[in-house]
Length: 328
Image (cartoon, rainbow, N blue to C red; front, side):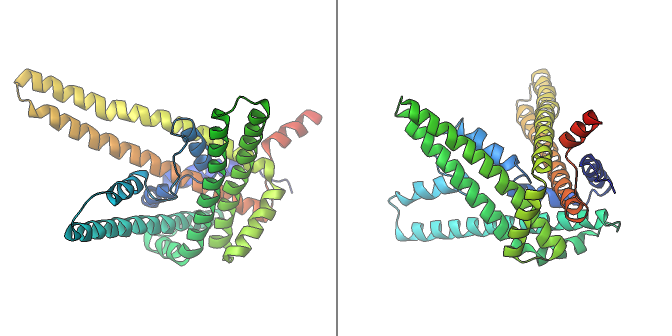
């Protein structure tokens, strides 16, 4: 029996996205965890090129939240204000935990729904998918924490190498930086793939946390080329999504804003400008969130579909398939 190509997984995942729009709700929350595959890693390395080298990564915690905490620590406040500030941070931390928890559940729900479809069953309704996500939330949470932690560690190594490189013109330092960067990229890619496959083992096969990690490693070592090829293809789709995002901003923000500004000038009602900003902002934000949600469902479905095929019958690399065709 011939091994299927991963293009089948990509095609079927897109069908799942289009036919089962209820999954978009899960995709909206799952986006908070970052993209399935190597998207998170690439994002981190792109950010390295634009940020201050001393910048500290903060896992799931938004950068502004940490900066607010550091800034408030040096304020000369009274006891009552400190108490109020404490409750503010407690509420924010609670909201953060809630969003992480819902995001993890949503990730599990998407994986379970895709697995059901690949197995020839119907995609479960919202409640069933949600409860399946809740069932696996603990193990999925620790997989995501491990992934985030390792990516933070390797990007920190690269950051340290950049700091050393800035302070030296030695050839050995440049070579060390290059080797560190290559090492970090390789390890980061492997970690990203392992996280995806481990999540599949947890949700689909009901493996424990440690069993899922070990099994994910074995699965990756049997399909390294396929994993890399699919990761790069999804990154290409991600680039297309970014272009669509910029187009959405132009269409849904700039055009309505221009119309309202024109009406403001025509009628003399200055407040119409503010209405245009709010209206355009809300529509463009909704469009971008929808695009992000769709892409998260698509990427997660592709990796889940791929995991199912690798796990059962194996998947053939497109590159290997091309080489075989040349030989024959």
